[in-house]
Image (tube, rainbow over all chains, first blue to last red; front, side, top):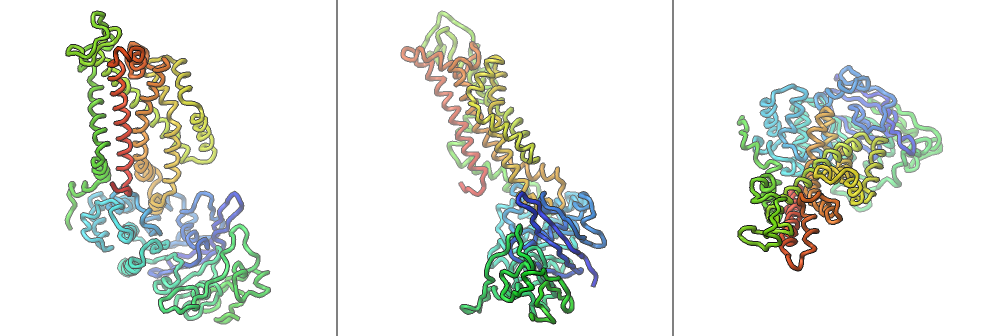
Length: 325
Length: 290
C-alpha cells in the first residue's frame, strides 16, 4: 500500500527558561492511505507535539531541530508559512480535544464550517452554505438547515464534536489528526463520536492519526499503534501484533493498568512512579526507574530503536525474538 | 436541499439574545430608556432650553420653581431648567468623549502589548503601571491647570488619565484569546492571521469593552464634578452639575432648589449608566443565565 505520510527522526525541542525540553526526541512513523495510526502515551509524553509539529502548530518557543516529514512527496518542514497554511485544513485537518472551547463562541456554526471551504476551495458563499448544511447532515445533526445558523453555546458537547468533525471534513482532507477527540466527552457520547469517525473514514477514504491515552480505544480503532514515553517511541507495531505480544514493559504496563468491566479486584496493575521530569531525564533507558525488569544495562545505555519482527519496532534492551528476555 | 432564508439565519443571533437578556433586567432597561431620553435632550438642548445658560435676569433672582421658571432661577436670575439641560449636555459630552479617547488609546496600547509580548509588552505595561499608580484626580488637576478649563480640554484630560484600565483589560483579553483553543483551531484550519484577529479575537473582546465603557462614562462625569467642586471643572458661566452644585451649596438652606435639581439629575444619570453597565455585563455572559 502507498504511503501518505512518512516522518523520520523528528526532534522538536522547546527552549524554556529552565533549559531545553526535548518534547519529541527522534520519532519516526509512517501512515498509509486509508489507515489509522494511534499514538498512545501519558500526558507530556510528546504524542501531541509529534503530530502538531508537522503543521507548524507548536508554541513560539518550540523548534523543530531535526527530521523530515514527507507528506505526498513534499517535506512539510521545508515549506514556507504560506504553503503550510494552505495544507492546513485542506489536506490535513485536526479535530481537537475539547469541543467546548474549540469553536468561536460568537460565530454561527454554519459560518465556521463555511470558512475553510471559502479559503481553500474558493467556493462562493452560496455554495459553501449548501455544503455546510450537507456536512452537518452527514455528521448526524438533525434539522441541519436550521441548526447551522445557531451559535455554539446552543449545542451540547457531543454535538459540538460532531460539528468539529464536519469542519475537519469540509475540504475533503486526506489526513485527519484527532487529538484526544473523546477525552472531554461523556462516556455515552464517546462511542457515538468514534463510530462517526469510523464511518467518515470509510466514506471519505481518510487516513487518521488518533492521539489518545486510552489504549483500549486504540485497539478497537486502529491499524497500527505507536507507544510514546518521555519524547521517544517505546514501541511501534501493527495492532494485531501489538495485541498478541506487546514487547516493551511500558506497553505491557499500559495494558495492565486498563480498566475493563470484568476486572476483578487486584487485576489492575498500575505502573508505579511518575513520568520523568523532561528537563532532567534519567540516563540509559528513560523508563528504567519505573520498569520491573530493569537491569544494569538499562541504567547505563540508551536502548536502540530497532525492528524486531514484521514491522514491529521496539526500544528495549531486553526484548528479544518476540518476547521479553 | 432547502436553502436557508435570511430570517432563519438571524434566528437567535448573539446580539439578539444579549438584548433579550438585557431587557429582562428591569433596572437596566429603565436606565437605558433614561439614558436615551437624556441623550436626545442633550443633542437638542439649544432648541429645547427656554433660555440660554448665561442669560441673566436681575429682576428674577433666587426664584423658586414657578410656571415661568419651572425649576426656579439662581443668584443671577438664570433659568435653572435651561442650565441643568446644558449641564447634562456637558456631562454627556465629557462622559462619551473621554471614553472615546480611553477606547482608542487603551485598545491600541493594550492590543500592541498583548500581541507583541516580550519587551514591547513590558515597556508598555510599566507605563500603564505608572499611569495607574499616579493619583488620577491630581493628574487631572495638573492637566487642567496647565491646559485650561474648556470642555475639550477637560474631556481630553479625563481621557488620557483613564486609559490605563482599558489597556490592561484589552491586553489581558488579547493574551488569553490569542492562545484560546478556538484560535488555535482556526489556525489549524488554515486561517490567515489577519482574519483570526478580525473575526476571532476582536469580536470576542467587544462585550467586556462595552461594559467597561458603560462604567467609564459615569466615572468621567463624576471626575468632572470633583474638579468643579475644587474650582477646576468647566469654566463658568458654562454650567456643569459640579459647578452648579458647588455654587448652590452656599444657598442650600434658603434656596434648596439650586442644589436639589442638579443633584437629583446627576445622581439619576450616574445610576442609570451603572445599572446599564451591570445589565450589559450580565447579558453578555451567555453562561450566567438570567
